[in-house]
Image 1 (cartoon, one colour):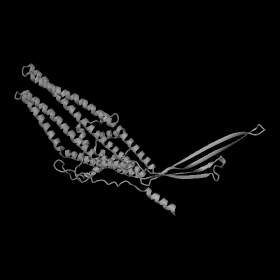
Image 2 (tube, one colour; image 1 turned 60 degrees about the vertical axis):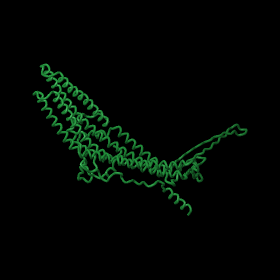
Image 3 (cartoon, rainbow, N blue to C red; image 1 turned 90 degrees about the vertical axis):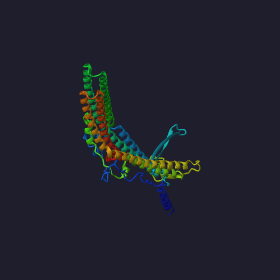
Image 4 (cartoon, helix red, strand yellow; image 1 turned 120 degrees about the horizontal axis):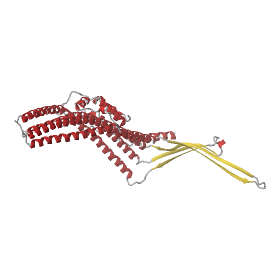
Length: 472
């Protein structure tokens, strides 16, 4: 009865774990988004889990996203990191099982002897053969050191996978933002070209008035300033468009069909769907960076169990069984079988508090991981609330910007007519043109902000349901 009881006790000890139970704190953010005039709380009670195809509906942007998901190098690095983390988790898991090996050996010796008086040599030989197999090493995990190490690596692998989802989510959002910026820069280039064309006509007319003695030379120089400013804007926007194309190619990971680029913001805005406000802040718990922080916390908690287990003795078992014979023919005869078993126990008597300090280290790392988890939630809440605040007022800003452009255009037309009629000065006409140019650029910037706010909300909510897998 003694051996079964001893075996049962050993197995029971092997199931022990010294790791503390992971307790996730309550999210350190309000239970709902801020409300008020800036947020325009809507009636939607639940925000659906959206894929990028639901948010970015333009087929051209979807095609670019598919190409990016297949070719982007940063995403490939993230996937490779996931594969390495998963393999490391399997390595740790394998350490909990016995290691079984097999070995074989053979030797042969031959010696010669001369018979007395005959001169004839008699030769004889002998051979030894062996075949052994068994447990080469196996540590009894009495205090859960190996189990907690495997759990830590498993959670680290899951955290790495969540990090790859963050990379994927950021890639799609960055691509959408670059695509929208390209459309805005195309509009700004068109505005600069229109302004330059009008400025050239003003320079021509003003020079004619100067030659006719009607206008002073200052009018011509001021008109030339407007033209130079517009030409500088054309050069700057041409460079910006080229840089936008380079960024899109980098994100996509290859060359891009130019037919996939938008002609302007008018083509971009309808293809980026607005997301609703008025949802529970608990939705942030599915953001990839929050999930990653949670798994980092769980891994740190398991590391405490590993450090605590090192305070206790470790016991290792070895076993060997096999056949041995001094002749090949008798290798499997009775008596050729042999076996052996052994065990080792090791315990550190004095280490100047090093192992206890190791436990303190893991506890401090757990506290840091806990703070990181809470900080990730708070950051996610802030980013989402900021995006919702802009979304709640952006429509009014777009309307105001359009009204400002319309008024500035009308003012420029009337002022130019008054100047030609001799009522207003040429300086008033130039100021009106400058105001129109600024108003048109401001309207484009506001429209781009509307699109970028929708993209920011998609990014902040972590809404890409297609990002759950760590492989393409």
